[in-house]
Length: 280
Image (cartoon, rainbow, N blue to C red; front, side):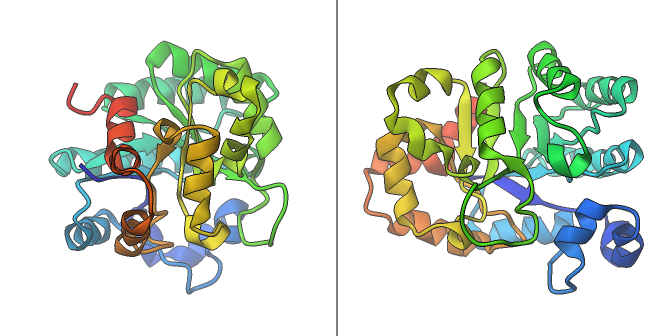
């Protein structure tokens, strides 16, 4: 089974009227003001999955600053997942600053079949994880059994649109302090798995996973081997960040690595199946 844990789709209305949404949301403007930044629909993703032989894609929401935009995007993700015959799994987004509305939305998406919450972008959405909003998210996750996926940024390296996201240290502290939540750090968690050589981190990150989204834009392919050695293959989730990157090309990178075949299978889909209880 091949599971792409981190893909993005948008409602056709957003794709058709990009400029209107650029004016409504600063985070969306930062990532998608360049007309070359691709936006995809569910149909686009399903065609890519057919071409790439990807079995399941997790479709991530966008960290809109507005509760209403989060809800509208969630509707599209849930509808797309329901129509996909199990090929798409929806991670929905919340705006925790809209506290009561966010709580209600979490209940609604969980009842409608959401597999998790993400891609959450705290700093872009205007809050910190070391706050009441972080506690709200952890409470929702534990009560409803929804994993939380956060965009996490590297503390060093080149600049790019979207890098001003959640700092690695803040993500680490949240994961450490909330062992009852299943937590995923997108984009290799800003490099946090490499700190797995510190003995205490294996315990502190026992309920934390890391996806490989946008890996080829951030790291050399050696990141896979280094992360496996430091933290273990069972913590890594294959992810492309489609449509930013091509699913086939990212899978080819994984298949070409000189790593243990059991590790490759775990990263490609078995870890995701266990985390999301696919087939359970």
